[in-house]
Length: 108
Image (cartoon, rainbow, N blue to C red; front, top):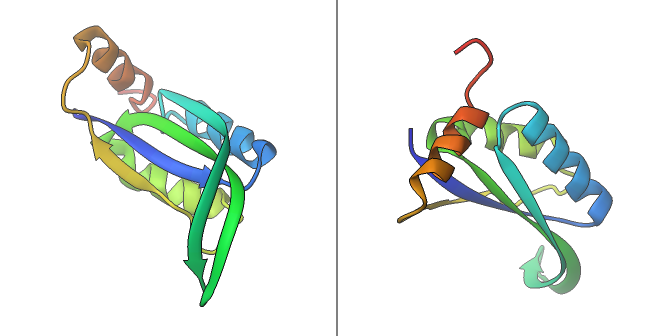
């Protein structure tokens, strides 16, 4: 298995907490960090926006990413949620093993 970091922005702490909790409960993520106070500037439907958001930093595996992405899209209030995966170039091997163990499907 290959560990990755996934990023997702949320409109508020309540949404971020709900998504983070479900991802970990459903073993789609080993850990989710929530960073408040993020300000995003972007263009949406022809208008410039600047919104306060919360960033989710999600530790998972490449093998679980498709299911994680589908679950976030289903849970998220945004029409087009951000779900981006980044490769982990190097890490503490026992931590990577922990990510893999925590995201293993039940019964495997």
